[in-house]
Length: 260
Image 1 (cartoon, rainbow, N blue to C red):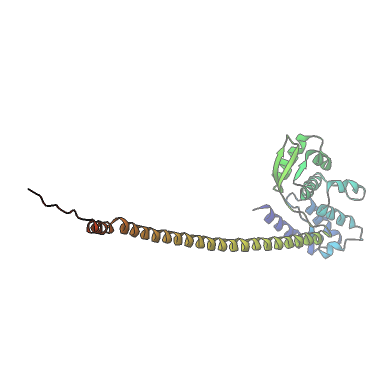
Image 2: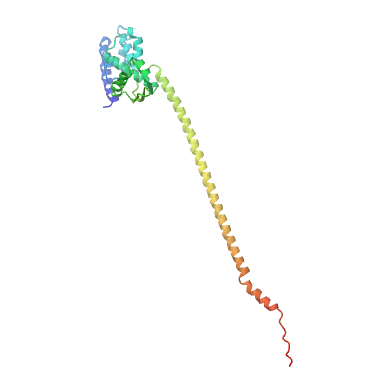
């Protein structure tokens, strides 16, 4: 079973259980959700009406915790630690994993220095162990650790829950991408038409050139036949006629009588 399918099953179970609870009874489900090692999406639980009803109550802080795991980072927790319940080690690990996903959303090359600062890690060995054992083995990210360049090159990162307002930005980005794609497609189609027209023109020119060559060949062939016939007339049969005429007009010698 892949990570997405397993996560979907866990969410479905938690949502069904949470849908039947109200008030304080929701707290164990929220804690279970933010502690589960295979769950990294929380928007479905956060969107439940009975969970939303915790806002403004004595348990509203648990909605804040759930929202932190849906959209926040380890740095966000440190900024609000005074008004949020203390996290367990498993929950801290989960929030740091989610922090890596957030960083990978905007940059596919994550410098070690940035990661150590955001995750409160003191050395490279500790950071690489965390990325390998807690992130890559968990299936939430894939990539390459470059010790020479001191960075983590991300090739895949699981998506997090959409933050408020993020959907509108995504739709705007997709709309711009669609318009750009349509313009590019139109440009490609115009170039294809131009290439087709040029191909037809080239074929026409080739045909005209071939026809011209054939005409020249025919003309040269006809000229050769005419020259051949002229040669025969000049140096063939007419030479006999000229010899006969020459003999006919040549004066004959008179033979003088012999005296004795």
